[in-house]
Length: 221
Image 1 (cartoon, rainbow, N blue to C red):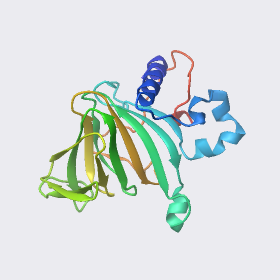
Image 2: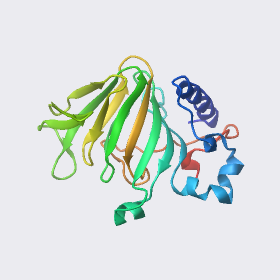
Image 3: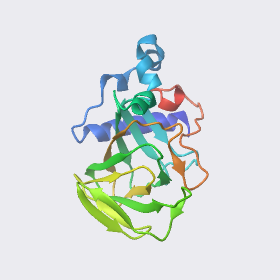
């Protein structure tokens, strides 16, 4: 992705988030120099901030996601079972924009439709070898109520609805007809190691520096 495209997506995404009355924390608007400063160490170390990805495929409008991580614990705390064991993100998925099939080995997460279009989530259970089980039904809680679909089945989340995905559950998602504001509340998030994709793709975008960064992405630090 070109940095100019990323800068534009950041500006548009911030406006979309604000249109729902959701305001990002102050560090969202820090300059690259402020993020690189010593007192921003926790922000960098915990991967907080802007995250625009096309999964290294160069087709952001078709396969991509806008994310902002507002808070995140550490794997060290998670291993000890005490401390900051949680994470939170706000995300934007554009009309028909795919977040491809993947699973997490550690992270459990609630995916919440915060507003906009309905969100479609496709689900598979994990096979014994960690791959995709294309035969078994999948049961997931939706706002505390179990829902069962066949392998590859889809659930639709309307604004205000959510689904809980435990580690190992394979999932892909996209908005049905319009842009969707998505919340994610989870255990500690480690995007460097805890994303296993069905296809051989990357988690972060390859950035072409055609202009200066207005804001740094988490992948920049």
